[in-house]
Amino acid sequence: MKILKSLLLTAFFALSLGPLNAQDLTEIVDLYNNGVKALQEGQYPQAISDIEKALQMAAAVEEDEQALAIKANCEKIIPQLYLSYAKQQVNAKNYAEAIQHLLKAKEIAEKYADDDVMISSEDLLPQVYMVKGSADVEDGNVEAGIAEYHKALLLDKNNSTIYLRLALAQLEADEASAISNFEQIIAMETAKPADLAVAQRQMCNIYLKRAVAAQPAKKWNEMYENAQKAIEYNNTNMSAFRAMGQSAVELKKWKEAISAYDTVLGADPDAKDKSTIVYRLALSYENSNNKAKACSYYKQIVKDAQFKAFAEQKVKELCQ
Image 1 (tube, one colour):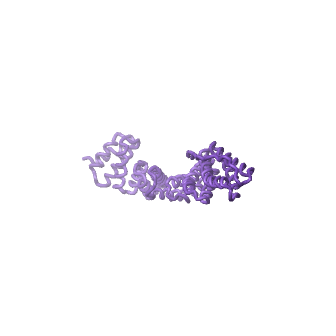
Image 2 (cartoon, rainbow, N blue to C red):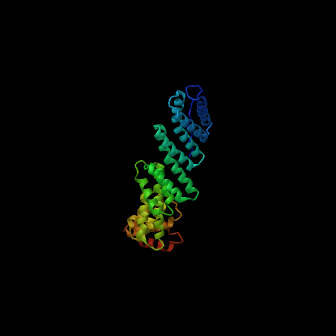
Image 3 (cartoon, one colour):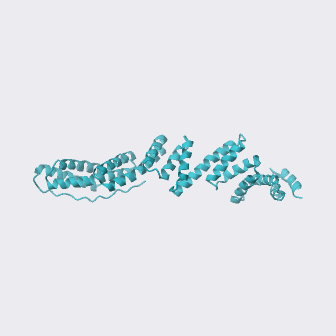
């Protein structure tokens, strides 16, 4: 995430002696000008230090015109300084420091009624929380990353990307929460298309894994229901259609089995498991009392080593 720092064009002050003690005014002007120079060089900590000191000294003066002008300039510059410093820290991937200075920018902007800095800080904060969360997750600090995502959501509840990153981080250890957040994205009218697509694929994968896990124990209803849910979220996943087809055959849901396997062959006419699919289609059509269709499919596997004997017998029975 790269955020370009704002350019702040700030004027230098020339010393003009007034009623204020000359030494004090010189110090105020020097601090201010040094701060402006540091600002223009991108040395934000030094700029903040100098300009805050100049503000403190100038604020103590009630009557000197030049000191009051410096005070006004300092109050205008300081919120922008903290915001620009925060952006610099983001670019340097120092996210914790960036968040600290964004919060400070927001606080000072509110104090000095700087609406632009206030809005910019509020817009940037959830982004930085999200990026920090992603950095934590990538470093293996998943719980810390999840905490940062939650902070981001408190500030931006309609950001589908934050929900997506949170759900992906939760997926391994807290699948129920991950599902809840994937569903949140799917239900959002403002979800980004890319986020929506990933959420739907992930939901499909979750239910497909459950379907596959039910197969060894022959929990065919469980396999069928989970395959059906997987397809609802992603109707281009042929593994989900295969799981639905197999469980449908075992449950004698012939119409559903035919539909599932027709979809698979339509997507991949030369599938590696084509013989098995054709066998199950033939069986489904036979049990649906469609002998002609069953016959045509049995004929396709009469030369297959695995199904040869059975297919030949069926051709004799059905294709007369």
